[in-house]
Amino acid sequence: VSMTELLIFGRIILQWQSTLSTARKYVHSTAYRFLIAADAWVFLTLLLAIAISVPTINVYTHGTHITVAHTMGATIGINTFLLLAFAVDILKDKSPVSLNTKWFNRGYWVANISLFIFWISLIAAGIAKAKWQMSDSRIVFGAMMMQLTPYFIVFFISGISLMFGLLLIVFSLLKTQIRNPLKNTVKSYKAEEKELDMIVSS
Image 1 (cartoon, rainbow, N blue to C red):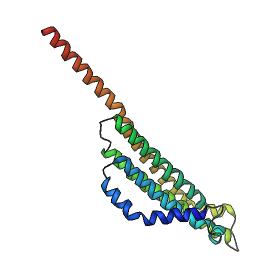
Image 2: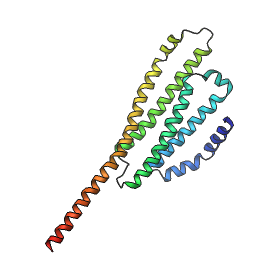
Image 3: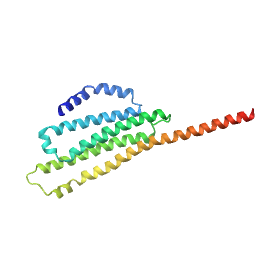
Image 4: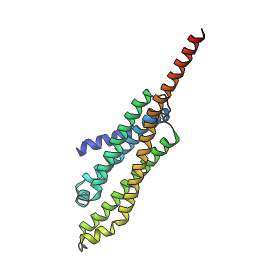
């Protein structure tokens, strides 16, 4: 598995230039922006996965928050952004209302930046716990966990911010779907009313 990850990681690096060229071409596509975000998280998650698969490093990281960081990066950074890309692409075809609203863009950046801080806080907590695990004169577990409190505070705040960013994206997307049928209903009603007026007048 690790060797396969190395091949994928190398392929991402080799194709980075062409990826940037494609990104510039489709920079205005909302769905493609989520694909770019997912691609960036594939890169970061693979980098972390390869690092913790090295036996010398894994001795330190096994059973720490670094493993959780890898899982969160894959689950939220890759899976969630891919699902959002598909959702935006499908729903955009059904709605002429633009998705590139101010709140939607804010949600996109808040979610990505918050997820990165969320991810880094877990790695930092994992490194601190790894030092405790390998220390000759270890303090008690409870005292060690108390020392990780600053990382957990950052983890909590960034998690709330991440949830807020994702909610902004989802609500902005749902708002276009709710608003559009209402507009179509009003337009249809006005058209029928105008047609009836023409029939009556004739």
